[in-house]
Image (cartoon, rainbow, N blue to C red):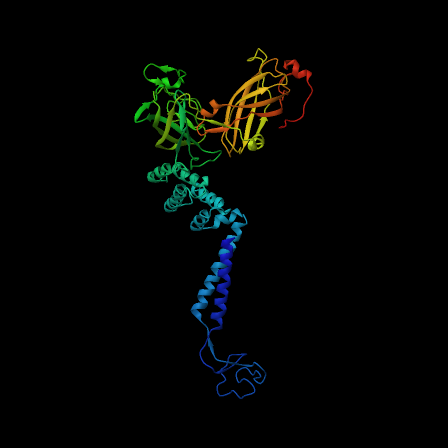
Length: 493
């Protein structure tokens, strides 16, 4: 709309200049017949015009001064009027969503539209540029210019990212019209923001060192779904001593006991949904290595091989680009008797904390072939909606008779919307038409997270959570379920 308003203002200004140039400049003060423009010098007292015969005695029949049109300004005004009117018509046509208009626009105009962030024209312009590339309608020079625009947009982290830019780059590379230098630049601009290594600031001696990596999504094409970025750990070091990965690292270390003369061992544990060790451990699988550390401050450095490819890629398969990063962090090892997480029991926040947690339950899963003891798998998703304080708790599922099943642990950061999936095996005698989910505060769960130093210190109860048994044959359902009455939807106390 800003462009249309600008074109409208130019049109009005050009029209004013046109009228001014058409009227012209007065070059003398001779009497002039207003009807035909005849110079009446020497005939001012005549009653009629000797040229056209018009009556000169009536009012306003004679004007003073002969005028000469400003022909140069007239030509400029006409040219600007034609350009502004045609440009405004094309722009209005394009803005109204007529896709056919994009096919008639020159490459220069499409490039200009593609840089109008926050407008509807960006996607249409990029789509048209990519269509022309795939149709062979762009010259090598035009392809290079648009590719440079795409690389500039990828490198500018302050601009919102449109994956259509990367689609143009990748399509040009697939067709062999993109230079190697530009393809390397595409890999260099891989991430939308710098990587950051997150580590727990204070760690008890003998506990795992929780590490996570914070980084933005890859600035690349996502045709069917979001692109995938993988971090592969090559090596890591503590206080300058480097530890390379080997197959033995696939077995998590569970021995945390003291050793004579060296104190306790501190395993390194990398936890992140995006962190995959170089030796191809599965995502989220703990990577632990026994490291003998003394009390005090230490420096951690991790070398990552950062790769990007489309969803489902397996190195060294369909990798679009890659780079190496070394991230650093500091942490402090304290004695095992010094807590690193403190519970919060502020009564004024209790109601807000309880309301910030909800559960979305799933149906019970049962397979007689793999579950001959008549136990049932059930779970759901715990959702936190911006709790005022962090939550670190053990999750338990309790039935009406007080029987409890363990569902692992959960940690939610403060003031963020996050979710956690849980699963539990319900025993045969579990009266599970409806259950209560209990979140019991856990110092261990807080210590096994990266950024939680304070956590909510009171239990959170989610009552009347309905358990759906519709997927289990009635003959296989527990007797307690068949005897109980149906209940309404899950509610929160």
